Amino acid sequence: MFENLSERLSGVFDRLTKQGALSEEDVKTALREVRVALLEADVSLPVARDFVKAIQQKATGQAVTKSITPGQQVVKIVHDALIDTLRGSDDPGALRIDNPPAPILMVGLQGSGKTTTTAKLAKRLKEREGKRVLMASLDVNRPAAMEQLQILGTQIGVDTLPIVKGEDPVTIAKRAKTQAAMGGYDVYILDTAGRLHIDTDLIAQAAAVRDVAKPRETLLVVDGLTGQDAVNVATEFDDKIGVTGVILTRMDGDGRGGAALSMRAVTGKPIRFVGLGEKLDALETFEPERIAGRILG
Ligand code: GDP
Image (cartoon, rainbow, N blue to C red; front, side):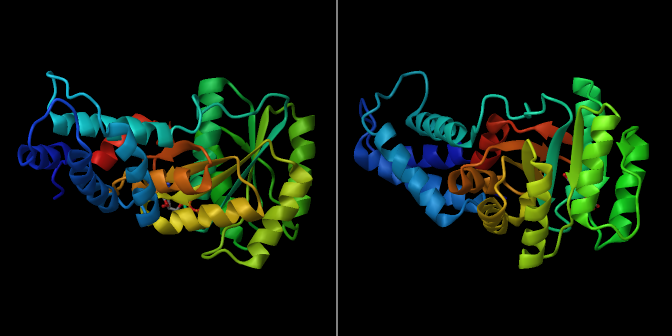
């Protein structure tokens, strides 16, 4: 489907005069191909443009080493720059959850995979870090969402806050806090309600919960296949609620991963985890190398 960037660039450099160092003209020509590759990987146009501009200076004048072709050399420069941009922190999976019970707030649009990701994260914290986790659904709009989380909790052996009909999200958040403290839990995860679009009610509700829960981490769950939309959603949530990290779901799909680059470049927020399937262990720490490889094709 997509021609590999390395192959594409070898073609470009075959047409150029070989010199001892990468000339400005060589680099410019090559970076045009890089920009196309980025756009095909669903990186947004302004981000692709800025990114290419930044590496243009870096690449120009670099000595062409004998061991690799100029095409491979540009790919390596681009690859390293992608990793630099994508890497939000050295250990994206390390959440600030010392000082128990630590609240984690999960936010995102309906259908982004928020409830599934809540359970995946709980399972991971329990199994890999030996944490005692409590999960609570604050989705009073959709009673089925509360039951969904309860069922997931049973599947993974993680406790959920008992459902009390008629409570509002802030009351549930307070009850979760009390229960987490009394029950000796290390972490409690609050799964907020989602909507199809961001609206003032959704934001007001999430903000009210944030104010009482004072989350140590506010993790935004976004569908990694929605490209530029995912970035817009993240920008808005971060402006209104303030997020500490992003989880990209559906990265098992055939998207090229460009949303991850746009996400980092535009919001500046670290991507912590990626969802790689519907199974409850399909959550992995974000690895910039893997996404860089995918973007370059
Ligand atoms: P919510 O409305 O945001 O809470 O979304 P759900 O957690 O109910 O997830 C919606 C659908 O997306 C479910 O069928 C999930 O199994 C599926 N899903 C969630 N994360 C992933 C993922 O990383 N990959 C795939 N392929 N499906 C996912």
